[in-house]
Image (tube, rainbow, N blue to C red; front, side, top):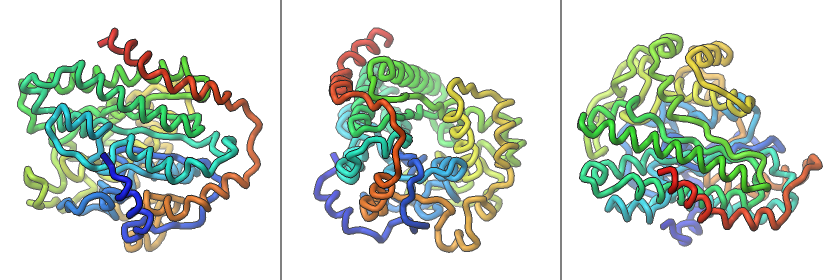
Length: 405
């Protein structure tokens, strides 16, 4: 579990902070918890283990990632506590896989966030338009592959532990007074280059675990919505469907991407050595075996933008192609980017207000003050009892979902 001593150390760290564009504003915030698909240079706080792939200022890509694009497209401030390598819950994943994960899970990330901001918003109207994101599950699956193959990790064991973990995370976030929450489900592993190393007989089982777990995530969101009057919505944005769209030939052609199956940067199995690198990364969908190029990240951010704006959003090839045109995604690269200033490649500063863990801790009072000083919209917040009662739903949710397993 993530230690309180390490949290205390974080408060004094700034070496790995993101460069801050400006002081916090009263814009709504996108608040992100997750893993390397979302990380903005947070992992370096928690481990000295180097990653041999050349990353863009601690992003697991060669430029900005999806939550930065969303924030730019929608004029949101971004607060990001995601950590590369994170899982839903360290104790759960370690117990079923035999791993020794000590990086902060999404539950730990929300705990750190709560310690940073939990007492700074006495008027909950200040945060009524903020959106929380919980993006997790890829590492839970990756670390469970051996156990799934051997039969030691059953679907019920995996899914029940995972759903309890993300439900706890969601309830902790809601308890702070936030009213909008989006789960991002587990991507389609068949679309990533590293999946080629999964033995062919095992591959369908892994995909089945992912799809059935994603179904339970959707059921969890529905239950949270129906039984929790304190929230405006709990929704599920599908990385599974979005990643599947990324490898659609019509979509890759529209993105001007020619290689969807190979990583630009090849590393060894232990992830300690860079073996080779491509000479034309803008032609590759993935920078390594797991992580997309910044252009696909831009598309993910644009799809999420349309999802947030549309209550009954439905993803299709035609919709994706229209989004590519609307947001001019095909023109985005690691060197030419709407988020860049003239010197962004040299500074890492983007044209958004963004805060990773260290920046958020250092600027928390200013961020909150700007929000608290902004006149709020009168709205029904939900009683204290409704929030309290929502926190006893986990057993009910688990019982309901076990019936579905």
